[in-house]
Image (cartoon, rainbow over all chains, first blue to last red; front, side, top):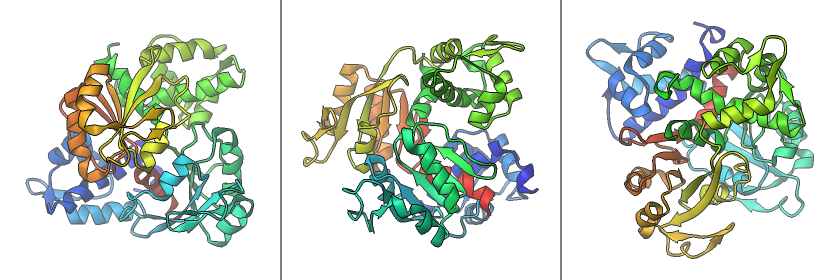
Length: 206
Length: 206
């Protein structure tokens, strides 16, 4: 099955399965079942079997899934058998937190460049990096062939900065600004918005 | 249609529609169409009409949606016509960023308490608050009747802290730690994991 044919909703669950499987692996587990994986991630066993069957046969009836094989396969499917270089733009509180985030190890990403437009921040150290001047961002990202960026700038400039990122060659933007971005076809955007996450839960609290 | 009958996948899209509609509202727009809203959020117009029809009739054929009415209705459906008090646990980089996040205004939430277990952080000021001692967290949250928490502690203690939050009466946890939480039935967890967001995009980059 080609990429175009796999529904986005299935794709969106694969990283969640992978996270749970990598955690099982760290605990020393070798095999799991669709039931067990389902309990970890809050998805039915039937849905997990259906989702994974889109990509071939990963488990045998009665013996479950080999976790190591499934992890390797999911990493290939998600194209994270390689490590993607990531630029972080905007060195406010959130940019700082993202630049120093410890959760990317073994997940397929590494932060390699930080940018800000504030002269007071440019040249300062954050984690392992010196903050670069956003005035050179398009050239720097283009030269380094970076295709993935995390956008941590204020909402009122996020649209303009995203346009610059696309111009620089970025094809995937993880947007922390609380605003929807309009991007050209073929450019991917995902949103990190705590208000959305919270509202998905208060629906059920009432 | 009752809550139990509305599929989670539809519920998960409502906050995204609301965000886009509130943004249109800020721009002074009064009406929109399922086509226009769909372009903003990357969902088909047919899907938007179908999702909203679960909750009654919001638009008339040919005249589109009244944005103000739809915003008010979605806020009621998501139970954010009220403002929910939120506790933030863990005052590392991410906790700092979350505690000072400017995106909750008009979204139904306000941070009211911060906790950490590090004696060097307890008693310090972050944004408008003095960091409280996590040793008193269960009592403090229980007394304040807080039902929503954002969990920003390291992954290796996240499970234990989430158990304390549930004991304190919290029913909804937004988890920033890169780990799946096991919680009792009836407790909601949503995950903020940048690696998952990035992997959902690299699938398409290849």
